[in-house]
Amino acid sequence: MEMTLRIEVFTHDLDRAGQFYRDVLGFEELSRQPRYLWMGRGTARIGIGATAEPVDPAARQVPTGTEIVLEVDDIDAEYERVRTTGWPVEGDVQLQEWGLRDFRLFDADGYYLRLTSRPVRQATRR
Figure 1 (spheres, one colour):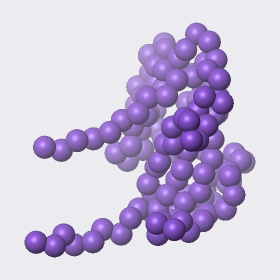
Figure 2 (tube, one colour; figure 1 turned 90 degrees about the vertical axis):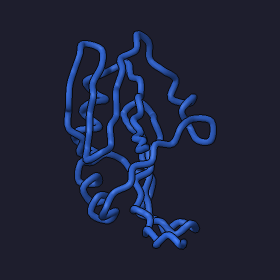
Figure 3 (cartoon, rainbow, N blue to C red; figure 1 turned 180 degrees about the vertical axis):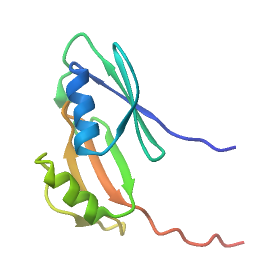
């Protein structure tokens, strides 16, 4: 049975959060309610819920918070696309010891994101 994953993040400013995921990461708005925004890019889905009070970004920092990992087909093109938006990134694309290349950034609410190349799929042995 197939399983998919969607995540939800929470923000004090729904419009600002939606703008980040749309303009910086290339998501599109799939639906909107007064306190909830549903966005997607390819098969990735992110729900953004409005909160009454700001959430402390320090609670989201690695290693105590959550790291949101988004896999892309062309990490170099994605890095350049994000950089052209003017949004700050945490360094250049890096080759990690586990063999994938990635870069990191924080969204408008301090959520930690890693954009990474897709792993090379190896044939399954029988």
